[in-house]
Image (tube, rainbow, N blue to C red):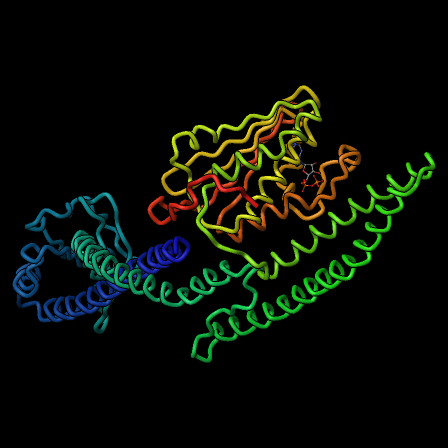
Length: 473
Ligand code: ADP
């Protein structure tokens, strides 16, 4: 719109200048033509007067043309350049005739400066009758032209302001109308994510470029939808197929482990069992992720107290923290004591998975002697869960990617912990399913803080049964 406005202004300014220059040129040409006709008329009268010899030239010219009264200049000279007549000062004093040179022999029209407030437009003609020749010059001040020009400029300026305002408003409305469908299309396109690829953009009923654009965007979304579905199916099928053999393997290895007495053999079986456990966990996570992506998780939405879920989950994991030499504190206890709770609506098992994954990471990436804390607080509209640790932290360059699938800051940092880079993407997906979000703050070498925001529901909507600390699943 700024571009359009500037363009209009430049266009108007150039048009105004051209129109003004044209108008000035036209005025001067009209004046010159009129003056030339007048000069020829004066010459005719002068020739006839001189030929007849009966009347005084000065008297005749003054009577016929009254140059002083009409604010004009007239001079008549003969062939030799002798001055036969010269008018006096005009009534409006617009020029001083004494300052006009006497030797006006060159024919044509020209502008003379310095004879008055404004320039003088002077026209000289020659006319002869028989052997007699007269040279007549007539002129008038350009002050009137200037005045005319000023008035024209004001009218033009006013006209342009009105036309400009109308054109600008019209253009604005037109551009706004023309761009409206694009704005709507952009807003609808923004709402389409990998989760709702089955939705389509609205297609206008008109047969124009916008309709074509919507159709081609919809075709693109359909192709994306297909590709995503194929990916999900593949992940789903692969993890499903892997689950059964892994369960069998785990069972067999556990049996072997129980039965074997040979020390080295027993160690190998135990290590194999660890690897199978790790693989099973990975497959389980992949399976969960593919279901979350497809929106096919079997979520059981119930109102629940997030502070209770956090403190009970933390209690269950306390032993793990102590094993690793970490101090675990849970600030949600205050809420519990107050019997108030921070209520949200969601799937208890999935939300517990969020807390487990965050605490698990905090334990994994905090060296012995460090501390981990979990806190739940409520704002007016949100329940906020915070897991903070004093661990190794995450470098700033890696922060924007930690929630990506299979992303690990540095594979060598957590090989021993067995991380696969899926835990946080599961956290993010679960938060999204619950219309929430997760964010992270971290300083390398000092620790990290993961914050989950979920929509809060008022206690009134929550059933009183859930406020009693029932055991979480
Ligand atoms: P992983 O299974 O590898 O832990 P996650 O998706 O849970 O995968 O985490 C992704 C990466 O983010 C991890 O590999 C780790 O480098 C980093 N990370 C996650 N949590 C923390 C934490 N509390 N402190 C330091 N780094 C972390």
